[in-house]
Image (cartoon, rainbow, N blue to C red; front, top):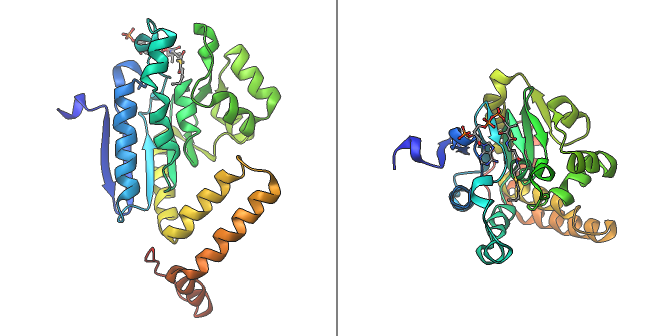
Length: 259
Ligand code: HXC
């Protein structure tokens, strides 16, 4: 398959694994084949001991304008049920390494839901966020009704999901949907820079910290705190904890090994 035909493009930059969605003609609409390729590449990076952080990006014009409407238009409830496309999304949810999203342009529907599967979101000032499924007679199906209110609060999430209106990058930042907003020329480079900064930390601590934060959305506070404490204690069994703390005491930079 030539580069132009690949649904995703993958490359590495030191300890950072980069994936770009690549269906430019349809604004990176997410069909099952693209999602399968994406999940497989994420799992490859997740298993690769040389990769500490993953960057997921679209193009400057579109992160992803949603699930592929043409692909879904003639599906029935039975065919949708049987092809079980959300099993692929579950694989992305299970990725343990931090995922930095580099978002520019359209970030809509399933695209917005994919962005919410990522951990740190670097948005171009041109990015537009929305769940416009309501305009085509459906509703979010890959977590939008659950993750969006957790980020935006109920009233704004309801507004976005029920009216189909888009949020600007600044609005998304103001309401906690994204981490940082940067000029459009820099969104990808900035995301890679942030990924490298994260990759310089201890890889095991990174994975545990991600797991801890995600647990906050799944459990009552007391259970989440107990989970956090166990993860925290476990890090004292790693060489990286010794190295990190000794380096601080000895006033030098730590060298983490992921051990
Ligand atoms: C398939 C899509 C697409 C999509 C855009 N295209 N979005 N194809 N699925 N989600 C295609 C268009 O058909 C068009 O193809 C080309 O991309 C360029 O799009 P235009 O509409 O011409 O561009 P523009 O006028 O700039 O408008 C951009 C846009 C609009 C506002 C993003 O394309 C749009 O509203 N797209 C749909 C957004 C949406 O409803 N997303 C939710 C999908 S449902 P041609 O061949 O004409 O050039 C969903 C459910 C998730 O995500 C459930 C979980 C998986």
